[in-house]
Length: 426
Image (cartoon, rainbow, N blue to C red):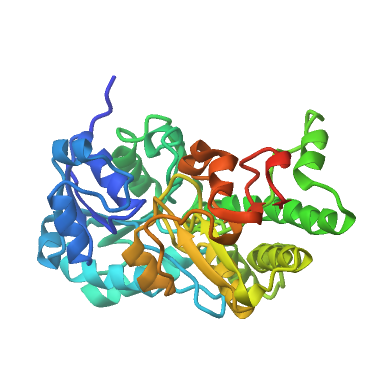
């Protein structure tokens, strides 16, 4: 039997990989839904039926009853506000909560007694109640917990993964008290077919989210360290992992670049909070150091390979295939492919990037890299397959090698092709 929806009129703040699918899901479930974003160009594109991130189809946008706006006055008609804005880190690897604070300041003047605010952004334990709550109360003039109700339900979006969509993954929910938690559940239950998990407190839910990605980060760091060791021992890491994987309880992680807005960022939120509490987290930070340095390692391995073939790195042309943080996805946030390009530049290597998924204008704006519209044939001294986009898999190793000169180095970071087709693999 379908779940009864609440009478809430819901605003979703932040229409990126998290907020946009949620807004459409809420609208499909019968809610009066407002999707809000401060990026006027993005909102205009959504109103025309186009998602620049490629996560939502034009058919879905055409069919939705959700409204999209960048006008803050439209927020006044809502009674529940779900915040899904980014929570990045600073250059010093500390939490940057300004986007979250800004979203709270944005909705505060429009809050009325009894309104509900739910945070979906990834944070460290305590942020919703210790930072968001006071900002909302001060800017609205309302009393926290009695007039403003608080909830937290961390997003579990995996960009580019249609199988594990929002509807198909259990949703953690939490709130300030049982009555508010019932209201939060009533909002999400009709949307999330996989069901909800009621956490005992907001801080528990915040902690659960941040350790999900920290655990994955550490597992990848371990196999990345295996790769660093095996490269010195003359062993192929993927072959070693394949052999070890014949044991029933060996976990199937592979080495690689760890970027994106989640895995490469969230552990720093936990370590920041841990150090505030007087504990220095050694294992988590060690894993972060390993993963943050893998791009540099790839570049240095390539330089060695060029020199071994008597190719002057300062005269070499290198093609990098892929710039997004993961395959079959347009998301370039915190992509570690940028580290490879930057490190090669330190050796005066001329590097060209080709990515059929990434928006060239955004890449240029965010990273100062000018992607090429298509690779040239027979001109490169080395080719790095940095992201396992399906387009590159379909090309095959022979076509990719045709971009290079005779004797060009092919570095297959992701193990897209068999060992015999590549000169270097992680």
